Length: 408
Image (cartoon, rainbow, N blue to C red):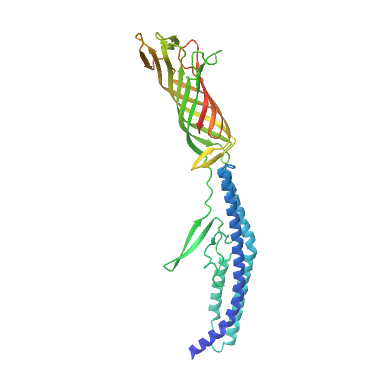
């Protein structure tokens, strides 16, 4: 008889409850679908804007740093827009759930009152059960201050379950969460569709190569008529780093590094350098020459302050300058070797050569000033040594170079 009473109680209790649930479930589902539509549209719009920004970076219309800042701003704006637009629907769902709870409670109480003589139901347990269910539902639909909306589920089949157990998934406009079944347990895997924008590096590294004209400058004599213009060259190769001074601005940078500098002077006629009693001078060679040159090789440490008017852009995981730049600086270094080579015709008319190393009174140390003006990775540069090429000379002659540099 007790089993029969239980079956009768369940039959009388649930029909009205199920009818009430269907109406509320339909309204809740419609609100959730509207929320999903809002999020999809906002995320699609964000995707289109980011594609345009990436295209602008590719076309070198804006720098990578500017693009990253624009993406961060757009992401924040989209998140705020989503939260504002779904607020009304979310509050509507909360109200519907509370009304649904009250209807369920009322139906149960009415049925319990009618069937009290058949089956006594423990109201204390019922209230505790309802209270736990309400807390669970409220936690799923918490206000912004309690549970900010961060991530949205991409699983359309499991997104909306039946009324009481279903809740809005977290919203994250920068990623998705897929829910899969593995041995009966749920696994949540985050998939980033818009990775966090990479900040432009404050310090970058690179190499450079320079080629230019080289001559000597003395008081009242800019350059020397004893050297061939096209044969006297300066060549430089090295590496270094560039660090922006301000945290979020490319306007000023400090460049520093190392370089191997090769300065070559090619003589006119039959002249060559002669060291006599510690004094280096230019004298005629005893035989007819067809090539006479002197080369000094240095290891120098340059540093410069650069005004950067264009910023940098990324290409194949490297950063390159994208605009005009102006710089002034200085350098210091030491002499590695001094080499003089004279090719001549000997007394028999045959070709011969005379090569000597470090026999001239070349200064062992060098320091000077530098300046450059450039566009992107090319620049016109000038270097002027404040140390004369040779020691103890009656007239000091200072090395001067100017040309084109490629790289950092």
